[in-house]
Image 1 (tube, rainbow, N blue to C red):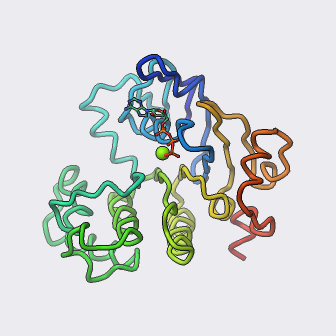
Image 2: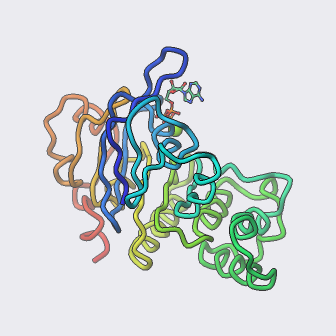
Image 3: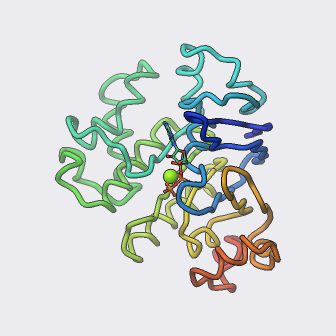
Length: 254
Ligand SMILES: Nc1ncnc2c1ncn2[C@@H]1O[C@H](COP(=O)(O)OP(=O)(O)OP(=O)(O)O)[C@@H](O)[C@H]1O
Ligand SMILES: [Mg+2]
């Protein structure tokens, strides 16, 4: 579903993505872990075409994004839902308007149907009654959930999450993790999740890829990553507690 081939990207001579290749299968949840500044957000933005790579290709379901012009890219974005780091909601709009935005831009659905879908999505993320509030009036955890509702409203085939649990209290982080798991199971979405939160990474991932200074140094199942002998992987994993029992979401769900 997602195929990245030898992606390179520099900003002002600083090489951020170095020959990045990755395959994500349809229906799979792949989690990217890695230290702050290693290029995770740049990679996600490259996957949806917000950043153009200097070289390499981004192939989504057989379509080469790197060859598309802005107009085709805009139309193609309905394939994706993205939860941005920090939610990136528009403060000038209500939460409902934020969630409805893509439906208004990409479909000709009548207003009533849009309202119905927005309402159902707010229920799904556990926030009924929040629709009329502005993002500035709600908490960080609620913003993440509104961001999630906005990402899912177009029923995309691919969901990208940038740090979905970072900065949340453990209970709210669990709520978000469960929502991600539920979404990927119920509607068989292909998910790419970026996080430094190892506990949650191991709970949702089918596979984990570790990024280090702009390239992947390890890829595998949670179990394989857990047993990796790569020194940078070992060092990264040793900094946070991982409950080995929870390695692998299939086991966790039982
Ligand atoms: N638009 C941009 N212009 C110039 N440099 C950029 C731009 N976007 C990102 N960078 C640089 O690319 C590098 C990687 O940034 P990125 O945001 O991908 O890190 P990250 O892995 O997501 O970190 P974090 O975990 O803190 O979110 C950083 O050095 C950053 O300063
Ligand atoms: Mg980031």
